[in-house]
Length: 350
Ligand SMILES: [Zn+2]
Ligand SMILES: [Zn+2]
Ligand SMILES: [Zn+2]
Image 1 (cartoon, rainbow, N blue to C red):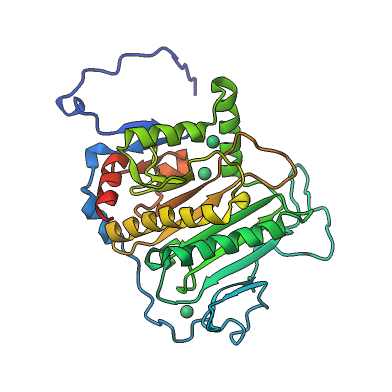
Image 2: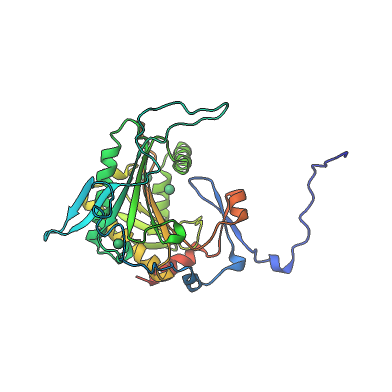
């Protein structure tokens, strides 16, 4: 076949009546440069998202592996907190089926042109006591204790030579990967810097170079003043729906003070964080009536390098959409709710 391709462009044709109000808006994430689509054309009302409710586990407490982790054969605790009267409130133990663990020998796994390395690292589970009390239903002091445990384990693992990045995340609901319904978070201390965080580090660095300001501090300042996407704030932290939200009801929680390193959070700051994070979780819980969700902490890597222009934060992603071909193909996510509308609805829950 003889193909002759003409690269010249032609006009897009006449604007139809339906195009006067465009069906969508493309918004760019200021840090990563990623694009998202806010599909205003097929927009739903905020109360229509409550049908993404979590599937309740019918087994309940019966046979739950985390009621008595020792008896159910979990690994030995590496951290445990108790109430004054003796019962435990939180415990951390190594995952019995780790995605990363310490191997005996570190052998080269490269193959031909491909690169590989052993999955050396640590994988731990952080469990809170009450099977039926997820984070949205906890008191601030209980939430602060969870952050305390994250910090404790972070500080422990970051000392290790093989560890360059620490991922802390929480899956809630089997729709988003929680195989055990008992509330628990996971920590993975791994040898490589997470690609998503790398994008953010690079984006923050680039922004700093051209603006001489931290991009996250800029976001915090703008969202506080503008208020459209604000969910809740106190004097130390802020929760808001990001301008380029990837899914409906996405919420970010950020310190108002500049800090690249989550692990340097003080006890006072943990209490303030618990208040803002707790409000965000309660708002999402109320708006979506107990949805499945993931959240994770993005903190600077612990690879011995300084990241002065990074700014740690938490991203909360309720499960309000399913990735389909377009998202997988392009990496552009389509959200059917404007973040401004989501934030207003979330504020109403508080
Ligand atoms: Zn349980
Ligand atoms: Zn900053
Ligand atoms: Zn992030």
